[in-house]
Image (cartoon, rainbow, N blue to C red):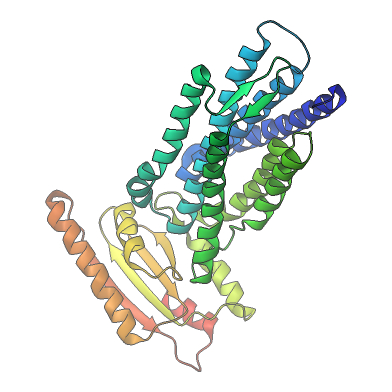
Length: 347
């Protein structure tokens, strides 16, 4: 049973989460957060946390109020809260995927299928309003869960862990997730969830809000090197690599240069499907791209050039009115050659 003072503390925690999210949303709008896919997804996650906090605060505030309409109102609000949580974990998975693949086409191809389990859970929530198959609300406005409710919770946990596991997996494979660190996001989120499970207090929204703050800071670091036209790195990122090379923290061995007179965004999309995940693709401006690789010999670079050329030929066959002309060249650093000098000479 939830005591009145415990409900009050929970409401205060939810209000803290709402204030944090309000400040984060206002900051985000000031720097045009909506201009990119991952930025728009981040804003949706913020709104989901706001909805979660508002619904949770309402439910706790209703405890022991004895309104005749109380159980019905709590049932509706709790349904909205569960829907917000489902959308939150789905967009968290989408966000991490975009950070890894940097491909809108990949997301358009994969994530409609990953939305099917979420859609099924949404349908069960609607059915639950009339049947109570997931949870019911007692006379004193407390939620009483059924076994099927925990199946829905398992779906939410799966999406959260799947996204974290995907980041860790691709990081081990060498994908350069320079400014995207999931640990600062995971820790407060998990702590908030555990507080919800192990105590009568509600801190899940506050945990998510703190996690999104750390995610916001990582996005700010990433924006400095972001090219909004192609969603790849910009010229300033090359300066960062040179600084890392001077400090001995980066050992760039190969450079491939791609040039086109067509839309650079189209070429960037084609290149992301062919280049290795441990490569850094930099848009230097116009139709010029530079790919930095720390590994690979001459045969590997020639094979990569061939794969890119084949991808361009396939695109030209499918889009005869928008043909892409492509020029490529590669450079391999000698063992005795300074990294910084190599970068400056070939970019």
